[in-house]
Image (tube, rainbow, N blue to C red; front, side, top):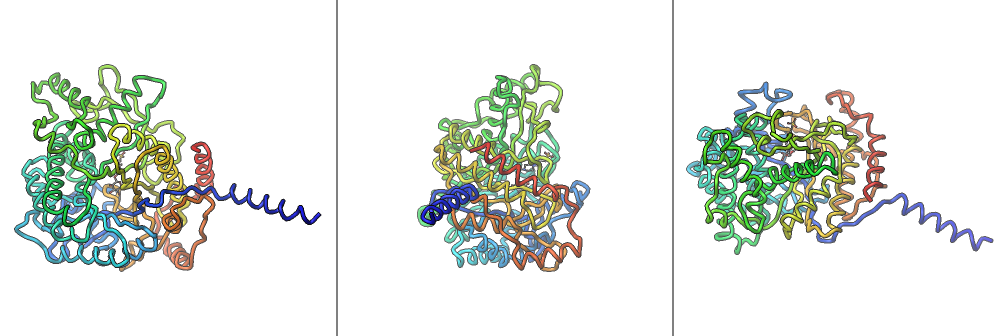
Length: 543
Ligand code: GBE
């Protein structure tokens, strides 16, 4: 009789075990990382002679444009707290730390006539500290903080920016290239150009639709290409690193998948948002996507611009010079939009001319039942990540894709189970894509810590680490998600049953936070439980 009980018990136990532990493993050489950007975390906005950037200028002169009217003058104070930052990357078991350089910390006026030793030292120390712990630095040369003096010359709309950006890039490649082996030139050119020049969204907030963003894009692509050629000619063979670019888009899901019009609108939106920068660099033929060239040329003519399209033209030589200038495809993505066509005569919704009018597609998230987040634009739809990676694979077949940003916001707190669910779900989607043949070689969670979130100030939190912005040394505390990510990064495995308890450090911080009551009221706090359930449900649907 007893002979049977043990095997039966073992069988039950093993069933329970595999049911509870939904584990999935990533390839052994998969690269895990975590990201940040200079203006969002550093503070020290004028420390040791740092010059003014467009974000210093915008936040100081137009505080009313920022949700909480705050700025990044001190932020998480990484200018002084960088050793702690490296500790955190290490605690996360992240092999890579993706951070960006502040141009005006290195060249206060934007030009090479004035180089700040303090600025060079700051990044040099950070890089050395990372290497001490075997963490690979991945450096973004430009993450949105243009020197204000160069903006006064038109910033990215003035072709003069190309040699000046190249000078800046040359200096940092010379200074840090012996130790930095992964570089990206520019973070999210779409946001740099369309949100900065076309809209009143990101600095410099031109709010001038339909013209300057295309000039910006043209110069960004050329500047990027010049830097990559310079790296390949002067540095790559001795230094042995890789260089690429990071682009971004939401996944553009046809509003009605059975409608040809909606499917075409979705394809157009992807070509405008991502193809604008990806096609010239990653396609076989180079140049802007055909649909962009044709639509903008035709619309420009109709609008009275004559034969000069608002989208500038590349010469055949320029097309060849830009094509192939990336060793990897960096993609940032957070969410999905539903897309439909802007009607037959493309009227209504948008200013004429404008980027969105040129695109002729309307985006919405109305009516979806996807879980929400701390940001109005960010809804959770992991399948979108899978679809996007498949689209990139089909369109360009790049040999190395790095997800350089992905993550979710809330309104604060350490018990961020919604973030845990988000990461498990999105990583699962990334793994689905890998299993279906997409060459995703690495993943960088956004973000290492709570930071200055641009136009929304400090109100939306993306961090794996909580930052106490009221404490003098900007105390950092791991959230639950940090413990989960550390486990994923350490084991190369997603494990849905892994629910860490808060550790001592977190409990102390939690008690302190609630007594000080410094957290903004959360809208999503009570959502944690239903969130986990939604997460599991979604996962079940996805598998
Ligand atoms: C990344 O950009 C940035 O690289 C990173 O610096 C930032 O911290 C992270 O986003 C999180 O925001 O009301 O729909 O007009 C649009 C991702 C907000 C691109 C959404 C801001 C997409 C930039 C607001 N966009 N995001 S609204």
